[in-house]
Image 1 (cartoon, rainbow, N blue to C red):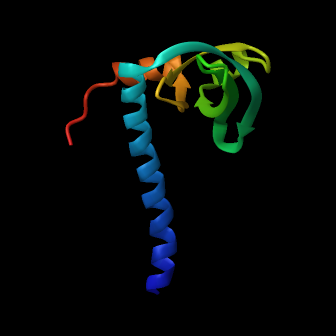
Image 2: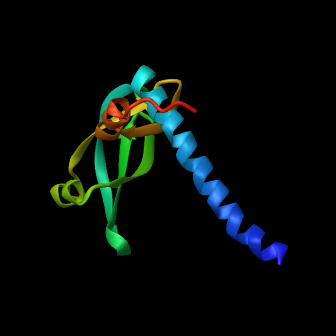
Length: 114
């Protein structure tokens, strides 16, 4: 019985941790991020109305990075493969990035007290 509960709890904990860490990344990107232009490389549509884009971008040294981001239906419909997107990345850890619009949204979100 306990084993079944663990299989249900572990994914929830991992999901919660991922969301928590992404929140830190967004704040870090807002404070120290460098803006660049990326390119949409793929669009994915999931059941239950979830939309995701994959994008690539280059850091100031010319190194290429890839990232995925969930987006609204409006953003998904507006973008095509090859479309430019504004990206923010950390100069000392360029693999950490986010869409500029997501970083701006995170900055506008009310501060949460823990």
